[in-house]
Image: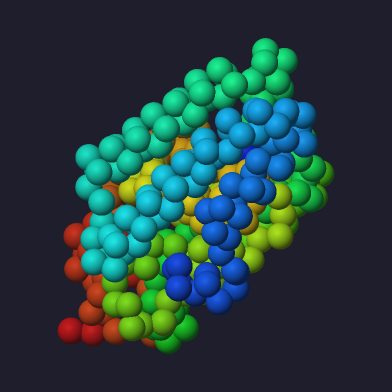
Length: 305
């Protein structure tokens, strides 16, 4: 999985220029906390050869973890229902609490397991022994109302799909044999409007592989859609259907990305601050982006008034 993540970062760099929980219920029967605890304990017993005493000690720890995760998901649901985005402080608190729980769990496991078992437990977490076919790569992009693309003619969805296709081509040439899927997240706006599909929670729910590697294909730097929505909310969904979940880093301060930004800026200056950001929508009426294009000196300016 680490190998694919590394190749993905390089592949995306070379191609840069180019319904939530309710719907999930229709496609997946959720496990109860007790069922989740029982299955997790059995998997751990098989891997670590736990004694009956150790199983009895570990079971309440797993159960508590599952309870904490469910409470976190319910809190997330309340925020979505209230159409409220958590603040940066709230995101920090949630992630800090998650890490504190993981540290406490690790320390308690260290007290219960013998030295050999604990070493195996740690190794089991680090090396999953996954084949390419065991991993599903989900490319998650910010969604748009469907009418923007299908009626107005915005090429955003085609541009994202084109980037995914180019990355997948690079991965396949390198010998990767995984399954890739494009999904859409962050439906921020009119909820009665039909948005691009499939949604990221839906694609996660239908995953049959053992692991998910999430690629924030439309996000160049970390922010609330990656640190909160993917790392916390989507991880919670994934924990119900796969054994392993990871996310590819955004570019952030990646040197090649910074060089590309600098190159585009230099070209913009050399062109006397005239640029072509992207084509107008096919059925553009000049009411949405004309002022923005005019401000940045971008062509074409397709205004009707």
